[in-house]
Image (cartoon, rainbow, N blue to C red; front, side, top):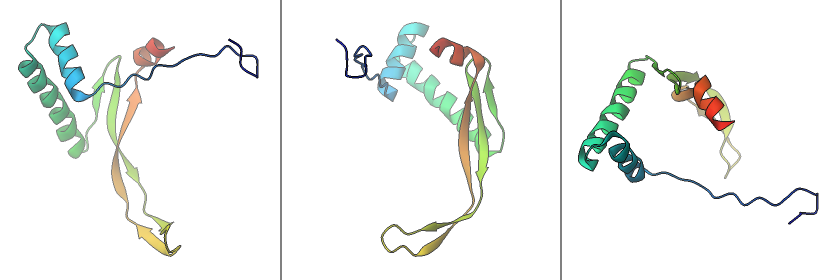
Length: 106
């Protein structure tokens, strides 16, 4: 079926994976129980969180790098009143995908 601009209509199924589904996938792929896979996922997330809190980076070759970025203080506007407000500087988590991950998507 052609759309008005001449391109074929494409239906995109939206894929979302929640934590439970991710644990199920890990358990199946690694031949672990769901409980063990859940503990492994929690340990991995905890290690990334702890490293980032200490200001470090986590690099998973082929997947990507987790790091901490800094957002400078700035002036914003209260959307309700329009009054100027000061927004504090903040540390923010960042993720830079690795080449293998990018290549897998294209």
